[in-house]
Each structure stands twice: as structure tokens, then as C-alpha cells.
Picture 1 (spheres, helix red, strand yellow):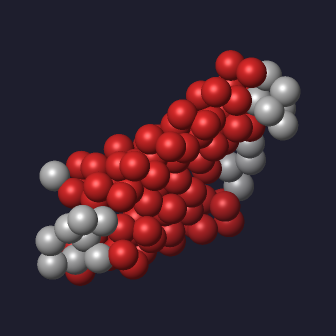
Picture 2: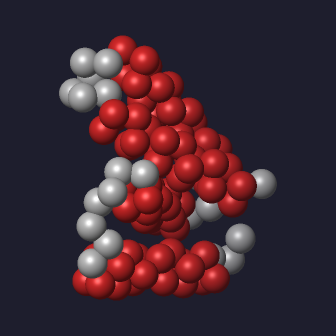
Picture 3: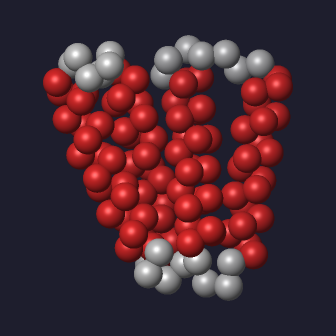
Length: 106
């Protein structure tokens, strides 16, 4: 269950990052509220996963899901650059996340 909580926390991190971008510096109240609620929920799910998973593994996976997820949303939804170096960098982050997952004893 800890890994499921961690995945939910990571997805919520992507949600709040996107909502924060859309909030225009918290000038759009709807997006600002989504940002804050998703942040709180993300941290709560992260804390639930940390009851079982090691701190380093949980935190790196959480931030990695957020980083790669926000990267993908930026490209797909916001039309950000998908040049080869950026894609390689994201692939390296993703490979590190997978290695941590397989190295975790839980």
C-alpha cells in the first residue's frame, strides 16, 4: 500500500505544479485553491508512504514523479520544448527512479 500512496502523492505533485503555473502567481483563485489542496494531499500521501518506505527512497521517488510528470505535462499540455537533450535528461531521471524502486526492500 505504501507504493500506491507514494504514486498518488507523486501524481498530486504534478497536479499542484500545473495548477500553480495556471494560477498566474496565485492571481486566479480557483487554480490557487487547487494548488493548495493538492499540495496538502500530496504531502499527506507522502507521509503515509513513509510509514513503511525509507525516507530517501520515498522522497526521491516523490520528487522524481513530480519532476518527470511536470516535464511531460509541460510538453503535452503547455507546448514546452521537447528537444533531445531535455528528453535525455528526463529519461535519466526516470531510470534513476526505477533503479530506486527495484533497490527498495519493500
